[in-house]
Image 1 (spheres, rainbow, N blue to C red):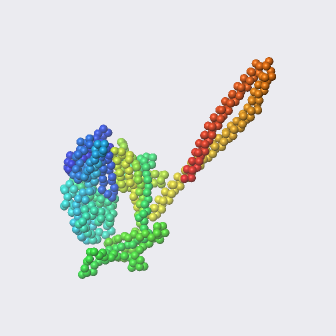
Image 2: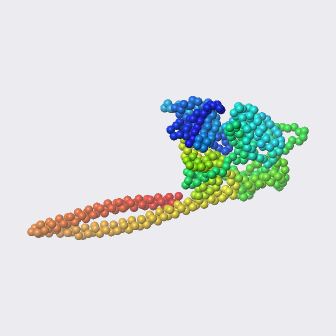
Image 3: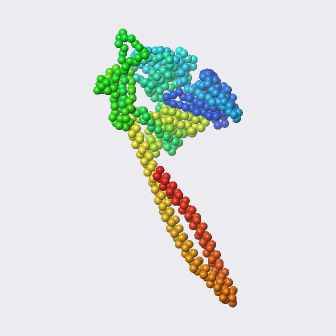
Length: 502
């Protein structure tokens, strides 16, 4: 279902090194890693039998992964410097790592820049222009969709000249205003999109008893805080005063409008996690009352509790006849698992795709930020599911114990009956049969004239004794078997009791 092609040079001829056809060329291993907050990567190993084994050159060889039946590109990027190895067995191996086209933004360095009153799109366009002046023609980028905005676009923005374009975008835009960036390879050029979220609502559900193989939920409240210290713009240097770049100017705080305290505190959260202070900076705020309002809103609505799911699921779009959307990093999928109390639209924030073994591919779903109320609700829902599971387990164990107890009572009654029959048999043998034999022997000594008749009676008595002994042996064997079964049932009962208490 996957095809991997390689070309030397941006416009070089493409050669297939992994085919979707069953009997064609295959890579030994191949895995794509995609994340909404990082550059995509592709790692694979290739056999020395491949005619292209020695054709990989760092930074100038390009690799593309596609699904031909959907005409979809899963990955495109360049090869990083490769390493070869030979094991002691004489086996050769080549591991190759590729990075996505977004890595082109690491190939340029920004110039110093400082300007006021420019919006985010103009600011990003400036960075792209600087990038395009430094790189190869095929690495030049056009600005695509830019829909991220700032609360106030007419603020002072600056760039230093010590970071790459990628690092500058992360530092000056994404870390401050949020959003995501993505490179699109269109027929005429590369395009950079900058949007709050890059993705859509998928038509494919991830559902228990359908395509969901496994799911694990993790909730991380480690970034919670109970107090916030709002910080505004830095104080301006007095006109005519000297500027010392080694001494940072103090920032605006809220003491003047908050009873002399620079902190805003949530007593409810203090009671839960103690005093944990978080500083937050608003560079464009110069009024203390506005700064306090922003800080209070952030404290009340903080969403720093992360909830994430690690999911293994079958991508139904790969199956013949299915028309649902594929799993794609950034997209939302309705995820349903009633046993874990999950039924909501969750986003794929990371994806590990194994081309050689698609069923081992995994998704990182969620990583959404929960409010305190969301967190408490999630904990209650999870506890409710666990309680229901414990109740079901206790009920099953209770039924098992009841059944075993009934069976034990039946077995005990059977043993009691067998013991009674055994005792009765022994009594009969001792009191009747042996005495009969002794009487016959005495009669044989006294009455020789009736020897034939007496011998006949002895033969009958001996036969009766042999039958009784045989019966006793059978009873003994039956009792041993019954005792063993009883021991086994008691052991199972004890194990059942121990497990139910765990």
